[in-house]
Amino acid sequence: MTSSPSDTSVSARGLIKTYGEVTALAGLDLDVPGGTVLGLLGPNGAGKTTAVSILTTLVRPDSGSAHVAGVDVMADPRGVRSRIGLSGQYAAVDEHLTATENLEMIGCLYGMPRREARRRGLDLLEQFRLMEASDRPLKTFSGGMRRRIDLAGALVADPPVLFLDEPTTGLDPRSRGELWDAIRERVKGGTTVLLTTQYLEEADQLADEIVVIDHGRSIAKGTAEQLKRRVGGEHLDVHVSGDGAVATTESILAAVATGPLRIHHDDGELSAPVSNGVEALSTVLRELESRQVTIVDIGLRRPTLDDVFMELTGHEAEAEVSS
Amino acid sequence: MNLLRDSATIARRNVIRIRRVPDVMAFVVVQPIMFVLLFAYVFGGSIDIPGGNYREFLMAGIFSQTVVFGATFTGAGLAEDMQKGLINRFRSLPMSRSAVVAGRTVSDVVYNALSIIVMSLAGLAVGWRIRGSFLDAVVAFALLLFFAYSFSWVMACIGLLVPTPEVVNNATFVVLFPLTFIANTFVPSDNLPGVLKPIAEWNPVSTLTQAVREGFGNLPVGTPEPTAWPLQNATLYTLVWAAILIVVFAPIATRLYQRAGAR
Ligand SMILES: Nc1ncnc2c1ncn2[C@@H]1O[C@H](COP(=O)(O)OP(=O)(O)OP(=O)(O)O)[C@@H](O)[C@H]1O
Ligand SMILES: [Mg+2]
Image (cartoon, rainbow over all chains, first blue to last red; front, side):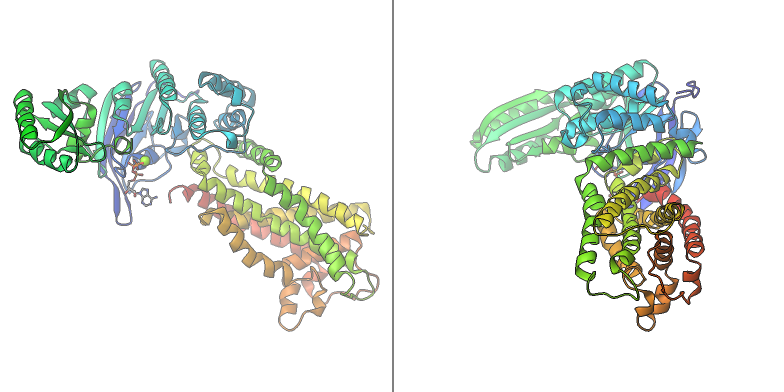
């Protein structure tokens, strides 16, 4: 890109967006310093996609202001578009075109000469191991492959600011790792990234700072470490089996827990935040034995981002529930 | 400049799709052949027109009807792009705001040109001939393409308003069948009863058909001069309509595109 790379930061102040009765954003503030990665974390319907849509000029907020790479989003949307790359939540590729044709088209629409767009497209296909598929219409591609081509589209013109809305949802672990590498590489080169995710591990891996949003406003922010510390204490995980075991265990855990429990009914797995781990562990063990619940496994562990999420929003990241 | 470049990029993409999407090919190739054959053999013998050859009379009507229906592609294509999220991707790119729709209307001229070639060949096979001058015939083909181009801006607006390509097809059939049948496409407008006659006479599809028929020299000798002003000045009247459609609907389509993703 030819634009001055001096300011590549992203900021938003008081973004409000309502859809009829639904408040998608209720006064969201965001700050992403140039050259860093912000992870926007939140449950379904939290407003992640709405925030990305506003910052990428697709949707106008009811009120609030935003700047991307020094450009006012509302006053100069076109200026913003030439400085950003967007990969939306759902792959937006032309399935009748080949991978190369798709990337070449996007490059051209960024104003790159056709040859250069093509060459850049091929480079990216190579990097994402999609070379052998470069001449096939995308119709014949798996969902994950289309997703990666969509992401490559956001990178074709090497824009200084990237918006990635759940970039690795639906990717296998290897592709996910490769995508993380590709993002890290760009960040090393000075690119600013705002990514939304449901995978707490992803935020942990990539983000310099994490903002947790729920019901359209930010409810916590900090580094992964800071957020984990915020939850404090330890977690007591119990895995039980047998009829009624989960219900019994639930009542036992509730008595020692310092926050909401997490329960996987199907698997018989429960987790509770506790303050004095060892004491809680022995209490729970004793109770479970006296009520003759079959224990498959029991243990204490340090909090993870999952726990942070649970603690802050009162519900789990959906991706974890469904897995 | 941006507009031209970006429209060309979008048009190129759409043209690549023509080859890869089988139902588009079917529409472009099979439907015109079917129409020519059906009308030529089913009605060809039983519809009489004064002093002439119905098959010859019919061809201009089929040409007009096919290119007007061809505009459906514009609407369906845009609705599909919207459904697949491509419109949002385009809207996030630093491209001209009119290029997605403009590129689509341009590439649909290619669809229509292909249909016209296929229809012409089918017509020649069943006995249709161009009886006028070469130049008049070229003007007639150009008029068909230009009117179809203008009409695709109307369909673009419909495509950007509805949720799925299927709705475009349904919506347009409701509009396009009356538009192409209450006209002189398949029967002389003089044969139409009551209020249908003036409607047909002022219908731009009729004047398009009239102009094309004249251009191909397909009006039988001794055909009475049309009494309605639009039919007397068919080419001019058709061009004015085409210009009005573009001037009115191009800005509307561009506006709809800009708001499209925000739904
Ligand atoms: N175009 C729209 N029309 C009506 N309501 C909308 C629209 N877009 C979003 N919403 C609503 O706004 C809220 C926030 O939606 P958004 O898509 O931003 O959430 P999200 O955090 O991206 O969720 P997910 O994790 O499911 O992608 C939701 O309640 C959603 O139903
Ligand atoms: Mg979303």
